[in-house]
Length: 177
Image 1 (spheres, rainbow, N blue to C red):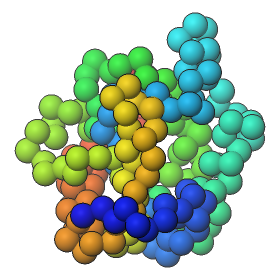
Image 2 (cartoon, helix red, strand yellow):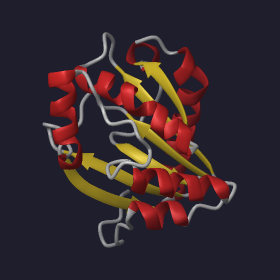
Image 3 (spheres, rainbow, N blue to C red):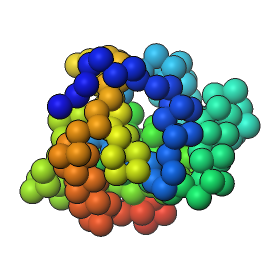
Image 4 (cartoon, rainbow, N blue to C red):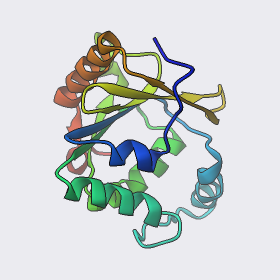
């Protein structure tokens, strides 16, 4: 069960706490988080997306992932997506090379191939197979905040779900948009 009384660390604090692994499972076809809204709108209008890892947009995330990976932490992200892809998923795919250049490993699983996987109800980060940061979203995809959980049974569910998705998913370089 989520633990509402546990403070939710920043992503810097969360990834800085990782000793071995940080995995992220994304299961929505679209997100509407504020910090991406202008870039997404620009991409819809022009087909161009910021992909410079040193840009003001990417630099904080790229720096965080690079220093995490430099400590020997494996950072993996899996995305379960409906096909054909939503505009937002295509936007995410265009930016994914920056995540990979920073040190993340990334795979995609078509939603039809996830039907028999027991999945948690929310996107999450799982740190060292023991601490979960749930990412909650509104119906329109806006951030509804995070929540922490360290229940071993829930961590096992998340670890099993992630590893099952990871084994079935297609590496970024092989995923055809």
